[in-house]
Length: 99
Image 1 (cartoon, rainbow, N blue to C red):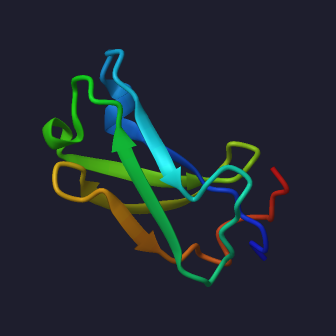
Image 2 (cartoon, rainbow, N blue to C red):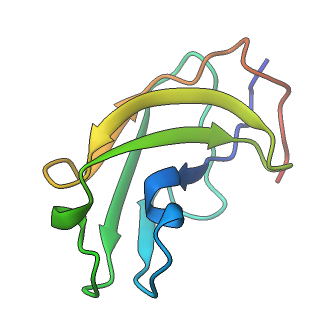
């Protein structure tokens, strides 16, 4: 059902902070896909400006399709110690997307 799920991650606590620092998702790369029922690895880093990952702490992560529709809430991670996660997209989470 989620044959081609494009991962767009929203790190909610990072965006809630009104600062100029940036968080970069470095895996999966643009144009790659994650498929429902198969493991997907997500990796991120900061741009060296405050707040650093080491200052952020627990963060909720969600998976959105190419149409920016929430398809799966992922367990929170502590960004101060974890810089990647592996999860399995729920094949029942939503329709496939080609974006």
